[in-house]
Image (tube, rainbow, N blue to C red; front, side):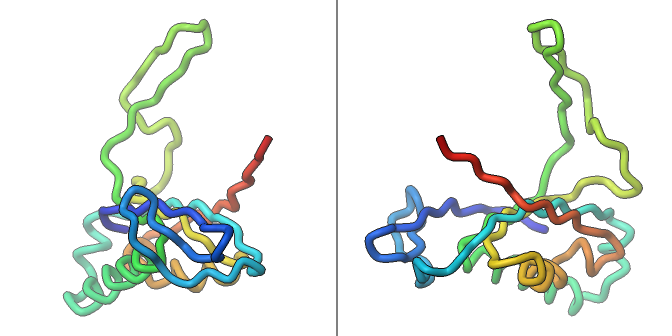
Length: 144
């Protein structure tokens, strides 16, 4: 997964995606479509990435760009900082908190109708193609 992000919102009057803060219209977005958000955490390393051909790398990066063009957020990550405030005072440590076989390389926040759609959308991205993996987490939005 690579860099850059565009936040989006839905214009309820017209049922269209609108880029927040950018002011340009995104893709048509039918208001009756049931959409969920999924947080995708991509794990991978340089060894897996360098094991791909230039063509495979280009295809994987193009998939990330298609996701961005849809209005999804796709980005790489830098090393983490762990924050705890168990006693009320923030305490930090070099992260990550979770230990995994491969490092966290990036994330995506993808809108899709269901799990099957998000799997199809993310399967050709860099991490799953380059001998890594992607965790797909449904986002539960709570509105007051």
